[in-house]
Image (cartoon, rainbow, N blue to C red; front, side):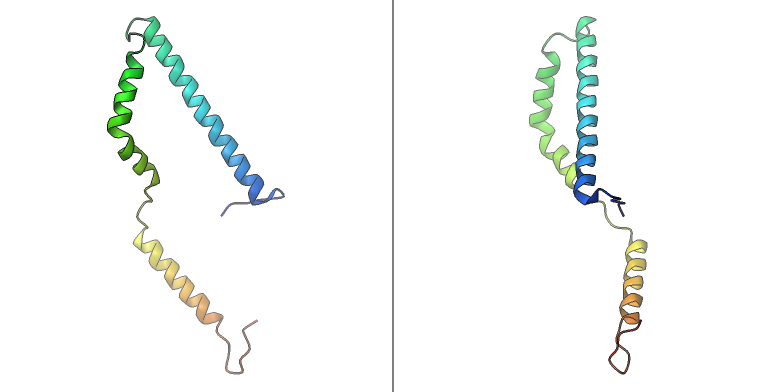
Length: 103
């Protein structure tokens, strides 16, 4: 569970999005530097990388995007443990014979 501290969930979400944005920009900067280095050394011709990237985008985009949205299968042991804990909680919260909820 996230600890929202004094900021609340909205501020926490803003911080997470800012961190994600910085990581994405950093990755793009490193990729661009690597590309420029390979072009300067003559290992790649100018535009060669962009052509290949466009080809791979067309070929693999749907598969790669769907991988990002797939949720992992839940662990059956964790699911069973959660269901058992929920069942016990619900039993403990049942009103007693006089109709009063437990304290």
